[in-house]
Amino acid sequence: MPRSEEATAFFYAVYSAVREIPYGKVTTYGYIAKLIGTPQRARQVGIGLKHLPQEDTGARYNNANVPWQRVINAKGIISPRSQPSGAQNQATALRAEGVNVTTGSLGELEVDLMEYGWFPPQLPSEEGEEGNGNDDGNSQN
DNA sequence: AATGTGACGCATC
DNA sequence: AGATGCGCCACAT
Image (cartoon, rainbow, N blue to C red):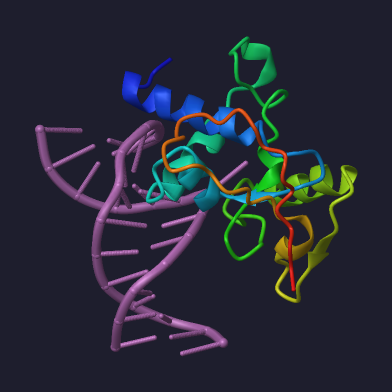
């Protein structure tokens, strides 16, 4: 693992938090950052997912046990900066679990956060990890 | 070692 | 409304 201890620990916290996102729900990079106690590091959350290991590397967190597809940006749009087909790939993965992904006129792949967003409240003294995660958080209106 | 880039988000203009 | 600036900091060159 080519990263510093600190970066590795941060990435692990990210992966661990992402694993808490329920099937068929999505959340944002910024929210994951907030959940692990570093609300200003949404960008680093993206970096962590970008470097999520392949399943066959044997890494304990990998693209098979971390639902990376459930993380999108705060605008409710699948990050267009991934691989050329990466965004489409992510959309396909989300649709496979029942998430309605719409395509905008400019090709943006959007998810309705009111409908599918997962934003449970986190306790002030609870950072790094949280044992619960039951609320599905969608309380529109 | 230094600089540029970027799976982001929010305040401002 | 859309555009720009800035904080954040791991990684590639």
